[in-house]
Length: 483
Picture 1: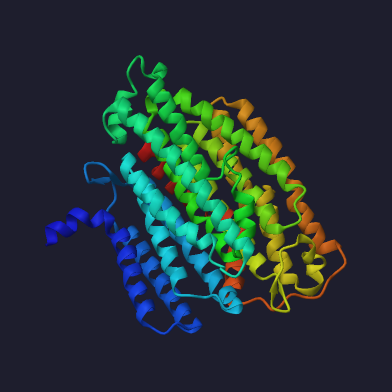
Picture 2: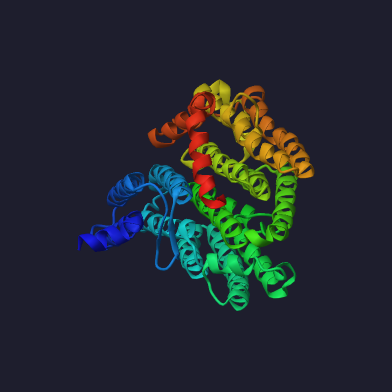
């Protein structure tokens, strides 16, 4: 038995989460269906997720493979899994008070978050096309339900339907690409595909190129990259705010990690081909997200377009195809998650007379009514805009530096341009909060969102002092894919 435990120890965090989700599902089914009971399930889910994080940190160093290479446990996987779990925990914390106020807190929600997180972790560790798809669908099926979680809301139902239809289409496209790659290499293993793609005629093989394109399209939908972003604004606006916070963080981390691993592990022999795809998607996402956000009046739609632009910035690091570039992706996604969770925690606090508010102009004069909330949101907006010395500046610095070092000067210039354009709508929110006429005050800030806002803002302010060890850890994780 001990030998079996050692053999499957690299999957211990996934086992913990899945078994925990099953146990809590049974607990919820046979327990009383009250709001308090659902919140208790939520806190127990957080304990399970923290336990899985401890198991990740306890795991031995180095790289291990399971199931003939279908599951990879390396520094890159551990780094991104911890980030995804952190996003899941914070998004769960945001849901407790908000869902309870609306009378929709059910035990099923934290269980769905746990199953989605387990799918993300399988995605991040996937070393095989089949494992990739299993993880992706485990995550996606839970997300479809979460998007339509508010059953009494037409917008939420519409968001869930749109996400399901377009998600199923993207999964079909991804599967078609995977089948072409299997036909080309005779295997679904990334290493076998990589060896086959190193042949002298691989770069002109139509099966390989079409398979690569379709696979990239399917994953690009999951990260809401242009031109496969069409679901994002409607789903972000229609879903409950804590659900939107979850969509904007943990699943995006997992999908970016999957794209990085697939590109670097399965297609190193045809890097110029996928670099062209990633470069185009990065430029389109950065510019479209920046321009489209300018005219938004709904803050959740604005954050949707902001997330599209931020995905473009993350892909700049991947386009460099270097260890420093992957390091930039890891740093960028980590800082992005912290900033985004803080902003959505602030949106959760936009409540008046028991109603959730989403119009940006509801923030008018917030500094006169609630200076701490306005100050915290101001720090986060400055950081999203990339204003030094806040940590958001260093996120963009690392990915753009990687592009310059890889001599992708045009890509770096577009990144700087998109950053300047994006600063407009971030600074506009600050102007509305501090200089416009004040409106009626919001309800008092609850403990959970208050803690997340405070932590996020403090990390943006003083995070530069602890950035050194974090940057080194990101480089170690990145080199596991590029050596």
